[in-house]
Length: 303
Length: 272
Image (cartoon, rainbow over all chains, first blue to last red; front, side, top):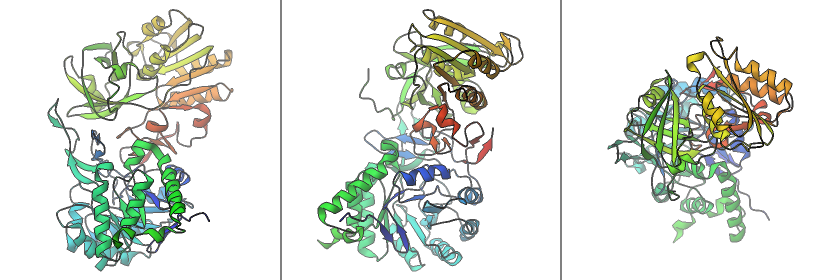
């Protein structure tokens, strides 16, 4: 029997377990359709704010020698209202809308904008490491996390995911707070705050100086976080961070993730990477005699 | 050649020569084996330290092992590049993007402004048997450049280089797209290639494609990453950095945004 690579992340059902991570390629519905046709199980949008944001000037991305990228795009996005209008015609693609804001009211307002859209879930960005007053600065404040999660949960019946990262408050504490406030699932992790300096011109390369490190160098860190979260809490997890091969995806399932997200791998392998990983997962399941993804989630914790 | 170089990693080069092409257009020459050999239509992300980083088509140089950027001062970033002096350093990464499918026989190349850059590089790839027509569009006489260069690159070919200016101060008077219409009506070209302002490309693609003539355009969009991650350069479902910069007329005629919209820095669609 052909293995089934469909997966459930709590209340969220996806036909395929590999999603596009937030911040990547996400400003046109045509591109979303293309990604879906290319094997993505869902696409997570760029993090949307209440108003349009231009982001930082270039350079906004830097390729690290030895692997990985550091980016400080600065959460550029057309704003929730414009974006909701753009995705309103969507019928086919499971779209997870990423939201970023500073106060509960920002999130409440944005959720209302999407009333007429087919939204699979909301993902709250509590972990962007390079923009002031949002992202990690919010995620690091447990009181604020509590208020934002409960506000969004009270504003919608659509499942709500919190994306956590490595800030000054331990991410396990942030996860605990989000769970206590009613979150449906956790995405772990975001990029890791980092920088690059050019030795010839002797200045930071990114216009924002600091950015977030993504790609293969952070995969072992992300994997450790997923393992720790799934060891401590009973909450569906989406693994994210440096995943570029099917073996990486399986590692995350074994650590306790129900699905995965990727972004940087697209910069290296373009969008063929979705089906490459889907096929690899399928082959592995056949070899190991699994009929469902569920059967392997968290298996690495048994030893 | 530095084959081991990670082309995504920024390489610092020193500007060795600055050529004033027009009062607002300059060519900055530097030594770099990788960039000297790029394909027509490919681009580099160019870092002007402390100012910005922008996508630039890679210009040819007379000297081997060298390449150049030809820039028109326009906004803050392009003016920053325009003002780089001999001896100053810039960063480059790439090359990125695809290239033209160069047909054999009767060729028509159409360029407007710095859109002539990939056309000049394309001219270095034509075969001696090709019969080449180059149309150069400019606003006025003092904005005309690369006419002599095009003639020089085509020395061994049957060729003509025709300039049109919007105000008629040099060459033929009118828009270059009117010339395109005239030429594709007269001649069954084997390939038409265009780079310049989007409306110019749109009309050129229409003129050729509607007559069943193979046509390709090299598109320009605001870019941040250049590597298919940020999504800033999307045109409909296409990403200019990864799927382009060169697209076929057939494909472009099915794209809902080409010639009509571009996206601003926040990703909001704006009309051309």
